[in-house]
Image 1 (cartoon, rainbow, N blue to C red):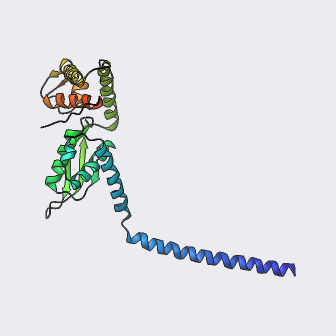
Image 2: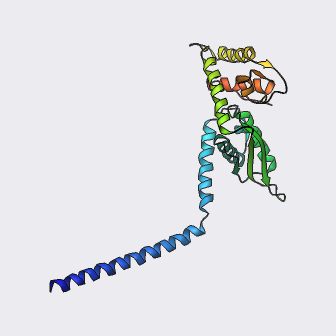
Image 3: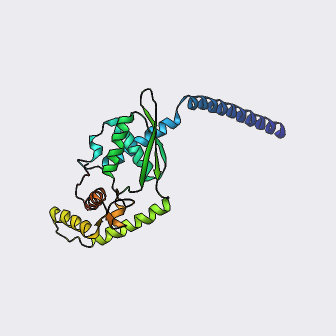
Length: 230
């Protein structure tokens, strides 16, 4: 008698497990159909773009190029800055045309003197409506070399910081940044990197763009609002 009841219990358990498996399989298939109908990558791309845009906005000063962009341009701006920060070579964008992406790239160049490794930009666009779908960048050197140069720039900044005194006014800080760059840099044309800050902090020779971005970099890091204007 006990064996017979035992078999009944086992049979009930097996049937229950089969029902659970069938329900689970049906749920999985329904979920798969739902997921298949959704653009999951687009969802995550939009979420990442929103997060990047919020980060970009929080880092901006009153007269940075970012503040003069339209909302769609700001989204593309955040994506491109993310690409450069991660040392990636391409990023998808949407909602901007060729004229707008040019404004975006110019704004990034003006706002981020610390991104000295950015090289030549290019982008894919639809010839019909001029909408841009992807932005690419070429780097002049690999990430290891970028890190080496970054270390040089940081060492120069630490040297510069040694001259900052407690109680200095904003005027004194601006004057000190100007004098530091002037005294430590020779005006020299046709140098590699003369359009970015490495020419000043790493090579000690540059032209007007390098001088300006170097001073902008120093002032921003010491809490002084400073925007590059071309």
